[in-house]
Length: 369
Ligand code: SF4
Ligand code: SF4
Image (spheres, rainbow, N blue to C red):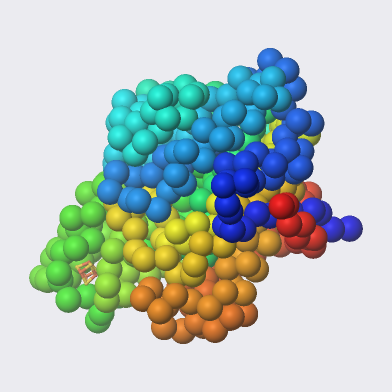
């Protein structure tokens, strides 16, 4: 059986603005059955690292906040702290970044709550029947909420091919301990013959795990947390992981974390994907490259697998934009994420999520006018 994924494109006029279309989209997708009067509703999103500009525009969040309030819910915007030391690694920095990126109360009309507390260790142990994990460490405030609306920016990602709903919920809801558990098997190595000793990776490693010896980078495995940032930083492809073993394990673990959250909130979740500013890499970076395809639209569904499958298909159906990073797989129908990250089989996460009972990859795309 297939799931319904509701969709709006970016055609609009004064009679039907994008805000009005977005409200209709989430209502048709089931907002009013997910959110009941007086529910505390966690709106899980990514506020964007400082310097990044590809994250979802705050005014769209206000529209979603209004729709939740109209359903009787009490929304708050939330995310968990990051593993690496950036501008969102503790609650004060995280909140400051969110507000400076435009997610101020005056704009979004909802309070911001950091899901895993001041230092990323306010967490709940959530049971999950996984191959890798039997319990997941999730930001306490996400678990304490009555309902969860995931609002994901759909874009490329260096460890998962793309990031959408499943990553937003699985990795994004985890506390620091949970994120560490998921990353623990990602162990990068330096390919000395490719390393030119430029030091770019050394500067960007938040854990000070990288150093230069005889003009070659070296990684201290005792310090490395497997965040994967250095892989993207190295323009010479001198930092690699055992892609065929480590990525499948990483993706499966992340899906188990998504399952822990979603299955604990059965019937109380709704997923929204923004296929806008489809940057090649995560919003966790302090910059974003040009989009790889045009702005496509916004999707909503109660099925987290179907919505990510539909989003990947919509991106891949587009021609690549001429001024972007893509030089391969640029034609409509060709796999843009495979061209960005040839070593990552992004479909694995969807297949495993399906196996965990989170949803189906079969979907019907229904356009909302
Ligand atoms: S960024 Fe790449 S080339 Fe430069 S020092 Fe690090 S591993 Fe070597
Ligand atoms: S994966 Fe790379 S950037 Fe991240 S901690 Fe390890 S060495 Fe540092």
